[in-house]
Length: 142
Image (tube, rainbow, N blue to C red; front, side, top):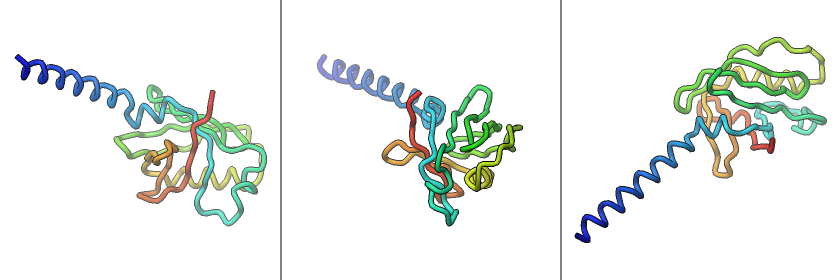
């Protein structure tokens, strides 16, 4: 009798744990948060010089496969393709085309290179070129 009780309890715990893990998949984590840029790889200009007033922000919609937000100056919207940990971004949609310095250009050029994503140990979103973090975003409150 004790063996069947332990077996039943073990099965219940495994089921609940696996359901919790499925609900917190990387894709779910990507879509359930808004993200603000805290790091960009490549430019020789300091991060605070590229984005003195406003940092790029992104939100992902898994249903429409659209990412939207701002690129530090103008609105940003593009299609994205997602498969497991692989991600790619389409051409951004039309914007107001205000010029606000090099930050916007650097952000858009880097987004075109992205082919994967992951979350670091602090929960930050890293957009990658192969295994190299090119952009890092932190979660922001709504």
